[in-house]
Amino acid sequence: MKTRPTVLYDVPGPRARRRNLLWTLLFLLALAAVLWWVVASLVDKNQLAWDKWAPFFTDARVWETYILPALKNTVIAAGLSMAIALPLGALLGIFRLSDHRAVRATAGTVVEFFRAIPVLILMLFADAAYSQFTGISPETRPLYAVVTGLVLYNASVLAEIVRAGILALPAGQTDAAKAIGMRKGQTMTYVLLPQSVTAMLPALVGQLVVIVKDTALGGAMLGFSELLASVRPMSANYGANTIACFTVVAVIFVVLNFALTTFASWLEGRLRRGRKSTGAVVGAEAVAELAVPGERPGPTDTTR
Image 1: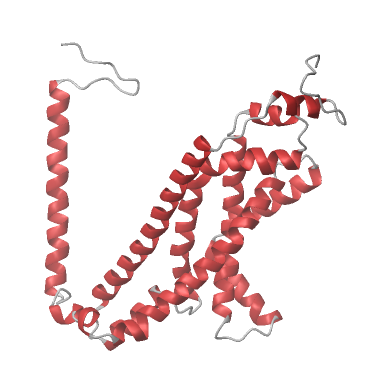
Image 2: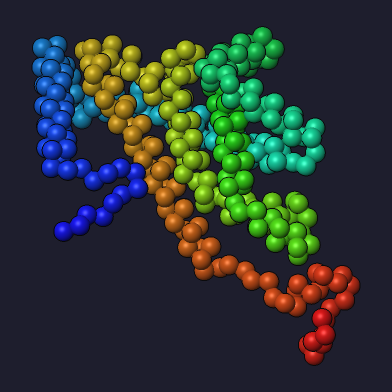
């Protein structure tokens, strides 16, 4: 029986399959040994005892005092950052495709500058700037600093995603729009952006997930009361259950990001179905009308 050749690699023979199976078994054994060592260490440190985990199931105060307020702050910071970074990034990406050199160069400089600086440094600079030049109270300043850092960095990254998504479209899309008399702004608004959104959506969602996770940097360096920052007071008040606190916070982050990606997958499918079922077609009469401005061919005029 002939085997089908593959493009990326040759089909492994009997010896190669046995060798791959052996390496797989060795890897699984090593992974099991590491997991056993981790669990044994946690047991020795008394981190898996029920009294360490019980507060999350039996004491509502741990949720009302620590987790839910921290979750609220995380959602607020991430939501504000998304709401500002998405349109700002789209504008910067479009400006980078401008026909005007000054606009293109300015947008490119802004994008490359803020994309090259770590988001934590942007947060620290924003916090220092707000402290020196504004009257924002120390209680709310960490939120402003976190949102500012996230917006500046992620808007620059989103600008590159938008630019790459638009450039990935076939050049015929732009040529067809020009052929029927559409201006560049109309081409971008009605032709290029709607088609590129579906292609860009996975990358956009990935960057939004990064925004949610990077809110933890504000808690680590600026004293922002987000989810990760709630671990220390929880652990101090509930018997040094650090592993349990970190595990609960990690699960909450997973749930948040899973909900975000699930919504994005639903939206992507809806957009793809909408493109298949509601595509507009320009008729011959409309093309003739655009080709000869001011003249509308009659129903019996077949000379044009």
